Amino acid sequence: MTTSWESPSNIALIKYWGKRDTQLPSNPSISFTLSKCKTTTEVHFSEGTGVNITLDGTDKPEFIPKIEGFLERIMHRHPWLSSYNLQIKTRNSFPHSSGIASSASGMSALSLCIVEFAQKIDFKFDALNFYQEASILSRLGSGSASRSIYGGLVVWGGTPTLENANDEYAIEYPHIIDPIFKNYCDVVLLVEVGEKSVSSTAGHALMENHPFRSQRFSQAHQHLSEIQKILKTGDIENFIRLTELEALTLHGLMMSSSPSYILMKPNTLKIIEEIREFRRESKLPLSFTLDAGANVHVLFPAAVKEKGMAFIKNTLIQYCKENRFIADHVGSGPKRLTNFEK
Ligand code: DP6
Image (cartoon, rainbow, N blue to C red; front, side, top):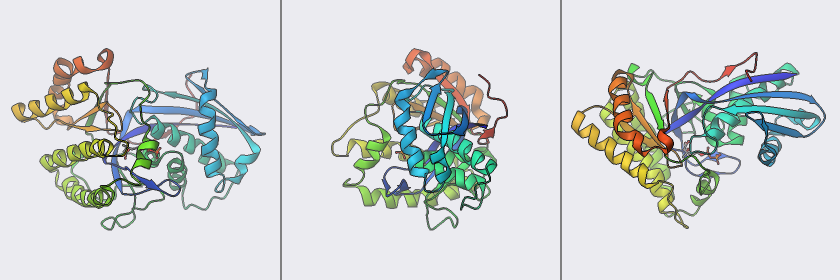
């Protein structure tokens, strides 16, 4: 039996950085789910054991240990997995390990395939519903993947100002938001497309003894409370202030870890300076956020798309690897596929 899902990446506005126990976040986060940055995965389940995986049609034995580790981590919820062989075929719409969260789209697509199959074989899982279970499994694969299960704005991690938010799985942002945030644009500028020098997992671990740890975690709760007012009122000025602060704080935490490290590249900083200068001069609401990598996500409302894209093509593209960027926007979440397009 085969199941197939397409699942998007997401970009955090308030960042998850630091974790405890089995993939539980040290602070709450909120993200925009993307649309075009996505992974398509097909899993063929048959009786037996073991896993094999292809990416874009090529065997990837080097991915097997990570997938096996993930399956072991979710086995207590899905013990049936121990008597199945999984043949996984996957492809990304963006470069692997580029700082675009391929783990978020990849782990969420795989989790959705597993939960759908579990349902088909009539396995009664504890969770209340399909998507909640998929978010729990995704989280056990990669924290940020828990948020890719839903479209729009998604929250993961308990916080006093949001009743149903919790550490185990993500939820759709439950309140009414200003329409400006419904189809926000995110153009991902590819500054660096190779493997990152320090993985997110290693970065999270460095938060354990980080000197600013407790201040950071309480700041994230504070920011989550602040962003809720911003989302409601459409206060773009404060949206920009807060999300840029979050991006630079994330990288500031890396720079102040022990050992310290830097994932931004000279062109990352050039782009940030250009965006801020353009915003000052044009008064247009273009801003940036960063993932745990050198790439820059340029954020702007759909209403200024034409001018935003012109600025990117005229000014920012020179800082991108081979002039590459991905023009994305807020999307509606994963899709179940009936035919895996090869
Ligand atoms: C900077 O979810 O990739 O993108 O749980 O170890 O897989 P693991 O980490 P990961 O960390 C993402 C960190 C971030 C911020 C965010 O997405 O919230």
